[in-house]
Image (cartoon, rainbow, N blue to C red; front, side, top):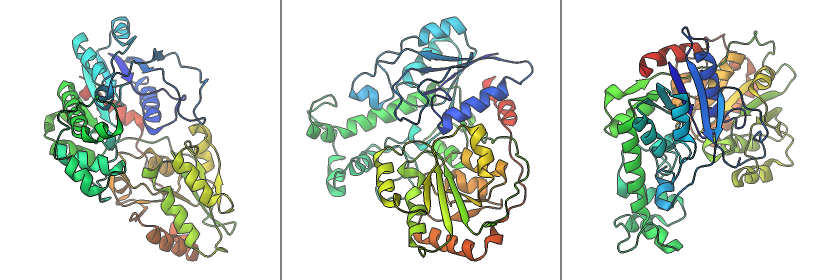
Length: 427
């Protein structure tokens, strides 16, 4: 079998969850017997954060293609590049049996899927995030509740406009029409607002075309499967294969608060959907003398959200920024903490963070929704609502009774299992 992975970027140039997933999956696939020929490609693009590895050396099975030509406004919203230079040539050179798409953007989108089917390869898509089928990107509606994911042009337009700063009643009125006689390519902010429903329609059409072109759709969580079913995608096309984590580390030696401090750790993106503000607010509500510390590892602290958080914690010794670390360095460091915090406010599809904590023998406190709930339900984890007050009370209880954080060893699913279970999907 000849297998081509395609995503927005490559690891370790970018250390996001998708890139780490593809990296670990492709490593596991190289151990299969018979061993497939594997290539992982991405189009070159400016890296958006100084935390990314601009000069990372590519592996022999990685290929960086020329930058895409992004196209007009409608094409960009519909993840349809005007040109995808180098991709058709790559198909002819590598001649894959299967192309596995891991992102949904102009760099890994509808034109790529069309090219794959025109070439004659099997097309498999892994849905890594809510934004694959949500134009707002997070499946959180205007009232801050989790959306059912059903594609409704009026509702989705209203939600996106309201998220962009348009008052809710005005957003609802605008969403009733499609901007006639204006076109989505018309210049000016007012035209962009009035034609928002045209773009919603283009996004929905592109996503549904992608699901039609796909021979198989791989989901990582049950909630993701349920969303696709509600969108009318045939059940036979959807395959639930959960993600995996790294191998178990040696047993963790640290006892809860053995040095008198409750040590918390977060690793991953600094982004509003990750809910860091909830834990920060919870800790700030505790007495100033409370012996607690939260360390952050990961990128995007230079974002607007990151800068807002830094303003709140810059003079507070209870919070520390530890930079971005490669996974082989980070995982052993986790064993020096008492608790991993995963306070996401959106529907995670893994998340890999929880499985990495399991591998390190580290207890987890996470949001009571989505993939986090699916992984922690029945495990020795702590599920919390998306409220700073709930996190405050949980942390205070943990300070009062740190022994409650002890966690028995947990089995961690290996990427070799994911690689094996994907074989029938590729066939």
